[in-house]
Image (cartoon, rainbow, N blue to C red; front, top):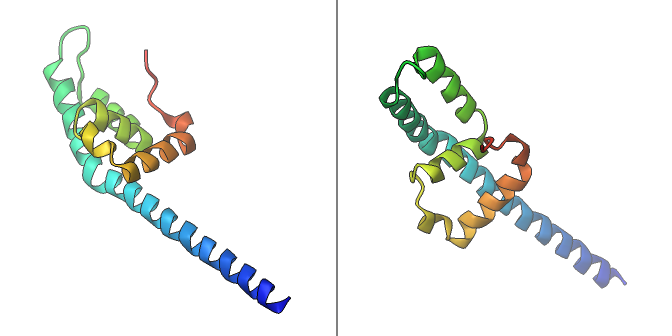
Length: 117
């Protein structure tokens, strides 16, 4: 009986360690989005807004700041904008680890996704 309890305890500990490793990898993915991808996305968005200035859409500094704040607020928005602007290539996403992290992020932060028209 004791051997069964010890085995069960070790199995539970091993499972929790495995989940902790997965969580750390996911957090590393989110940190990578915020540290490396976010500045590239915001720079690309700013350039697009500056290039598309006209009387109808003046895209002054206030517009640019608001847009950068909107897209930079959540990792899911950064991720979607990076995919749309091809900062993150689709081939990279097809790596199973990255696809799993992206799917988890979309499920966890789905309510914060950028609204599509």
